[in-house]
Picture 1 (cartoon, rainbow, N blue to C red):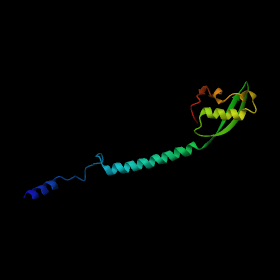
Picture 2 (tube, rainbow, N blue to C red):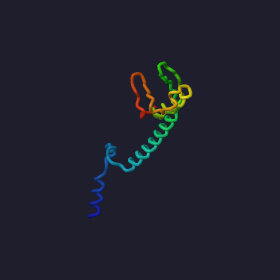
Picture 3 (tube, helix red, strand yellow):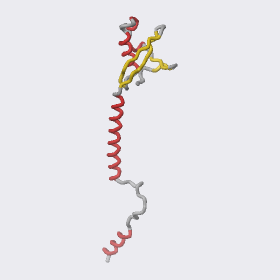
Picture 4 (cartoon, rainbow, N blue to C red):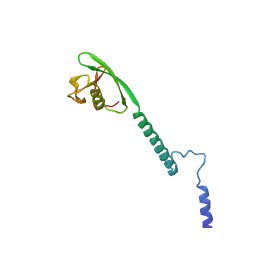
Amino acid sequence: KNENETIKRRKLITKNPNVNTSFLPDPERDLEDAKLRATLEQEWYNKQKSIKKERLEITYSYWDGSGHRRSIEITKGISIGEFLELVRKELSPHFSELRGINGDYLMYIKDDLIIPHSYSF
């Protein structure tokens, strides 16, 4: 009789299939979410990596009393300091005053803003 009574109690305590239980913790759903998150994270990382490998053509002007417009092609992700060093190397055969300095002595000015060397394209 005691066993029969416990079976009836178990039958009484069942889940209602019509109730939304998606907010309750579920280890299987958490595992699926973690896998999806990992795949999306890897996809985002690969996309960012490919974006950083793209090439940019930047038109710049070296000012020494008169403007000298040139353009240079660089990869995305390069810092302003590295860009200025590349520009200095490109301009040094034409302008003798750039031969004895490095890119740290140059400034990158966009409109009215001086862009710090630590920023990147």
